[in-house]
Amino acid sequence: MTSSRMSGFRDLGVEERRKQVAAFAGLADEDLRVLDPGHGLLLEQAEHMVENVVGVLGIPVGIATNFVVGGREVLVPMATEEPSVVAAASNLARMTRDHGGFITSATPPLMQAQIQVLDVPDPAAARQRLLVAAPELMALADEQDPALVAFGGGVRDLVVREVPSSRQTYVVVHLVVDVRDAMGANAVNTMAEAVAPRVAEIAGGRTLLRILTNKADRRVTRVSAVFDRDLLGGPEVVENMLDAAELAVADPYRAATHNKGIMNGITAVVLATGNDTRAVEAGAHSHAITPDGRYTSMSRYERTADGHLVGTLELPMPVGLVGGATKVHPTARANVAITGVTTAAELAEIILAVGLAQNAGALRALATEGIQRGHMSLHARNVAAAAGARPEEIAVVVERMVAERAIRAEFAEQVLAEMRSRG
Image (cartoon, rainbow, N blue to C red; front, side):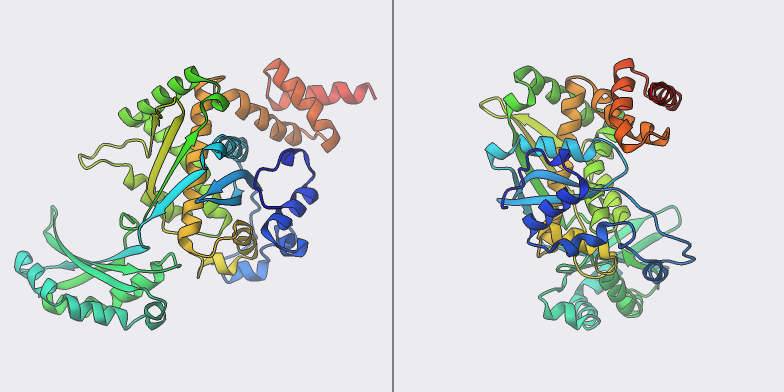
């Protein structure tokens, strides 16, 4: 099985879906057993991950199909509790396949640590002194992580900024570090701690903060895709999607919801693979602020010469394959294995592709039948289950709720009572 185009995948049972995923990824069925609630993260493992552990929380993991990313067929695990997210991403990915799928590129994996220097009598001159000492400081930082340097990473630059504030002008040193296939927080924080005393000595002040910045604007991933005009629904749908997208560019109130849709896809893959959702979200939203301070859309949409819709997305994507929960959490390891990636850059490209697909799916829904129809149909399954419907009863209850436009717990209970009274 070499194609992520799996017709009828949603109609299969869980075990059959899992078998197909394992076959696609070249894994044994047993490799995905950790996706079972009783075989995933154990309490003993959780105890070593965070403090005051009392249990673990299960989140549904769905598989997004139809993705071709960077010329490679991929299945994408998504951890989310929100209905329609996996379906929308899969559907819109299908509409890119005849146009080459998702085209990606990325900068080197550069992360930055900041060292804040206070009480400097001559900030401008201190900046010059620190820049002169850059080779010494960079070498000292590299000494803290010889393994990273051996893998081809390490410090690539040292930047010094003067940052005026209401209290004083701070001198802020940035260590720019190639972190290879790590997210990089631990590496750059360790380096910042090590060089801080020497930075203070050269600057003639005292250091306070010594920590990475989540504004990872030197570790950027880019993705573009052409969504087929006819599969979207025709030229009118394309025009409506363009106008819907343009409102997000122009209006921060719309941009907040538009970007949330992008993050529905991105966060689901980041979470599924054990990466830091908060770091990714912070970097993404900060990247959506223009130089003049205006919050705007993360994505852009245009029309091709032959009338298809082309979308582009460019965001910081600080994710890793080594260290953290990605290595500790057994389900995260299995999900990474499903993607088949071997580098953090490949994972970042897949994550961004899902974000763009999910965004296009939301725009298409808004431009046609409205967001509620598809979303609420899926939400109805949750309502039916919460009302006590057995698996064999759910489809009938959902059909009634959707037909009556009454997706409420009390109505689901009424339908169940009627069904059961008829025997």
